[in-house]
Image (cartoon, rainbow, N blue to C red; front, side, top):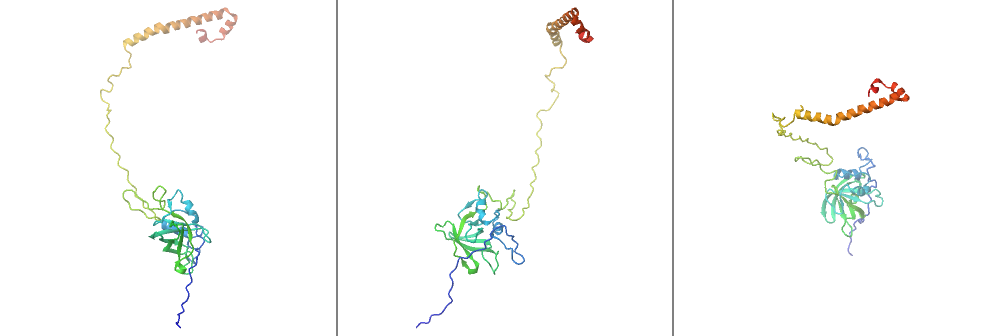
Length: 277
């Protein structure tokens, strides 16, 4: 009869559930007693540079129109987990490395309890695509307590890339300065270099210089003899007859007023200047 050595049975991996509070609403200070603990949202924002806020499950919709989104993992992109089961607020993690078409490494926080403490960051831990069509819609993720992948198929909305929908760098990306200045990593304060304005060009020499011939061709203000003669002729022909006619009309009007009793009353109230008109 053969002796069979007895070995302790190894339990099959079970579905492990990460911490449910994956949001900005919990403070991120990990000093002191370990609580409150680091959440996935501020950690993903820090390591990826993608400037989105609020609960993890809102990141996918928030990114629309602000950041490019897709379904292919890329280094630096944020994997956006859909809320599922006890992970009611979703989860976000940055892709740190691509191993193959089904395997990537992640940087994230508050997934595995480490040394009995929640809110721990994990860098370069494995995530495997288990979707039927290799579209990264479902993944299994490394869980530290069992030193293996958990069995839960976590639903993924997609990947958020740190660039705008028009292909420009996202708001959290490196800042590129003019004239070959080095890029400033996300999360640091850029030291801007003021560029001096170009020196103004000297004014071109004027082409309209005033010289002695400036007054050439201009007529004098003093009327000539011929213009005075023409003016006298015009006055004699048009203005003086009109004045004479007006004087005659006023005299006739005064004669009528002097013969009429009412006219005499009106004339008596007229000023001397008016009676002479």
